[in-house]
Amino acid sequence: MEIATIGALVGLALVDSTSFGTLGVPVWMLVQPRLRVSAVLTYLGVIALFYWLLGVALLAGAGALVGSDWLGDVIDSGPVLWAQLAVGVALFALSFLFTKKRGEARRARRGDRQTRMQRWTARAVGPDATLGTVTGVALAAGLVEAASMLPYLAAIGLLTASGWGVATGAGVLVGYVVVMTLPALFLLGLRLVAARQAEPVLAKLNGWMQRNKDEMLGWVLGIVGFLLAADAASRLFGDDAAAAGGAAIATAGAAAAQFLG
Image 1 (cartoon, rainbow, N blue to C red):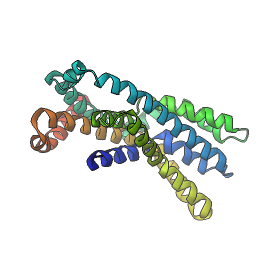
Image 2 (cartoon, one colour):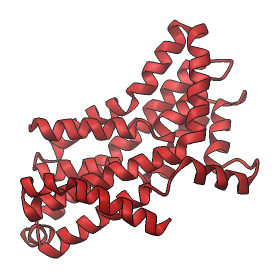
Image 3 (spheres, rainbow, N blue to C red):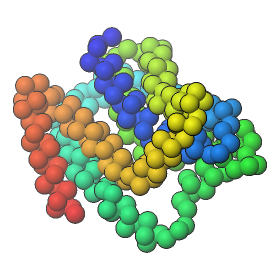
């Protein structure tokens, strides 16, 4: 296996580990006065299994498609690569629009109303919550985030391009989802071992994530956009030209963001 590909997958998994579904909800569960370890582990296990099953399905479908010679030629064609480059730059530009200030403005317009995800999370940590409820919330979180799971989709793309096959890719995805849950598991361990010291830290982390979730989404869009653009540029112009064009991609993205903003 190529070290560069594994490194990129680890990086994408760590980005995925900071999403609201994989870290925000577990942190919310950890800051409750009564810690329910079984509920936290059930939640993390279900969402990891959901991601893995979805990833294997996507990997199998993508592998079958890429196996077609005509489709491989289409994917490597100039127009498709230019389209990928444009999408990457657009995502990078879009990331600049997800700022803390804009998020605060949206929340001010919404008032005190909770989002759907917040209502579901409240059910998972409520006094009447069962493991079945927690499982349902984990599946709901996975389904909601499936529409915006850009790092995971980028990881599936890397695995497909690597040509390792579905069986090997499924094994790699096990490692991916484990890495994706490590920050939440670390915080759970911290809460169990040093509850008094961990509680104020977790409360601050929970507050920070609630205030900055828009910027976190912006970082995800920016990272994935840059990776897409860099990959397209390397296949269009060669690795040296792609490296030199990294700054140009960033500049173009920032300029587009200013125009859109």
